[in-house]
Length: 339
Ligand code: PLP
Ligand code: COI
Image (cartoon, rainbow, N blue to C red; front, side, top):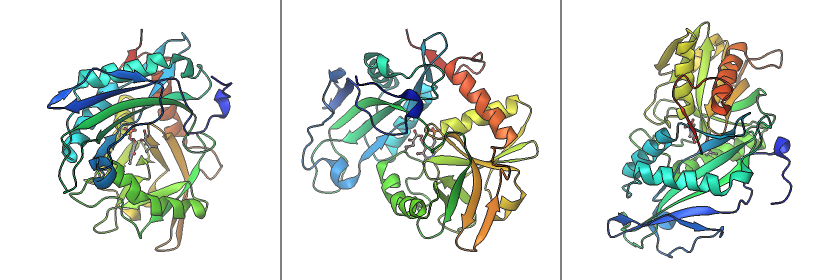
């Protein structure tokens, strides 16, 4: 292991020592297999390659002050992967197999879990895909489930620093009744044109709108959108967005702090009335949004005018991250400490 500068880590891939794999064949999953190879040997007609039959997850392991490693709400990720598997007709990964494989992958790469206080964490990437051969469009008969881990820093540069986002009006990442609620690769492929264009114009990412009417906010690239108005936490209800586990957790924290929560369609016209806006997700944690540009109307919406993140989202951020690293009691029962 070369020397890793934990404090300067960005959200990228760094090789770790091992990853874990299992294979589904004849209706059964194999025992997890450990390998040090970063490569997969894959059939040229695998459905994942041709027809995008795949889904993934994203979660993090954190090191606490006590040096113990903590996982955040892994069961939610296991359940979401089952849901995604159903969404593109793949073999489901049972919760116990998911747990065995992620625990194994983290433990075998324990030395890559960044130290407490570094702001970095170990990103866990479970991946499920059709590895059986088909040429016609139909689900594979064989599947591979694998987990790799990699130490990461903040997804958006600068950590909890307000970012600029561009509203996207010419690309849809998902269609109503499509696959937006599943964590499948195709949604991310569909989002790339928009993300690359936004980055070229110096925006951190895009805000997707509802595909049908282009009136409501869907989500922010790889993260959910939320807004704060007075004592209310507002977040979009939409059939095309991923159900973020971070967002769900922030909802619970907000309610616990005495805030009101509204999960409902969020109209673009509401943007000027919000006190704070932000993006949230495993990778993004909470990324305050300082500016939103709408190329359709040439409007600019500004928040955090003093350059600092909004106070309410900082309170939510501090609470969430304190629970994740074990600085605060796990009152919601979200944490699994690895032995
Ligand atoms: N939305 C999209 C499209 C994502 O890829 C993610 C990341 O997983 C999220 C939202 C945030 O979800 P979570 O908080 O479960 O990581
Ligand atoms: C995550 O937040 O875990 C994600 O999956 C975002 C990712 C696509 C980079």
